[in-house]
Amino acid sequence: MITLQNSVPCIQERILWSMPYYEKEGKSISFSACKKHISFYVGLEAIETFASELNEFVIKKNAIYFPYDKALPTQLISEIAKWCLS
Image (cartoon, rainbow, N blue to C red; front, side, top):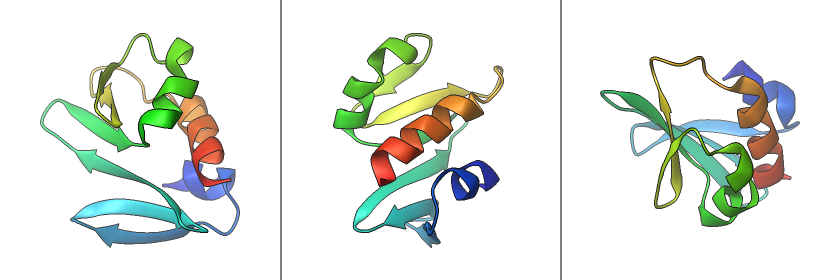
């Protein structure tokens, strides 16, 4: 995803478990396309850190669900990616 590549320098991208997987210095995030949403796997600590900005999204375990019927919050994704991978 261009947003992640522009947000985090030297990010490594690969497919892992059939999902786009981004890694830098042992830290990782990934995405999964589901029937009604995109799952953004960032971990519980990131979800807790950004909780106030995630009120409108469903959260399950270590993932944020971005529904297809809403615009993708690219700025928020960028901020979370920077936090997770820096």
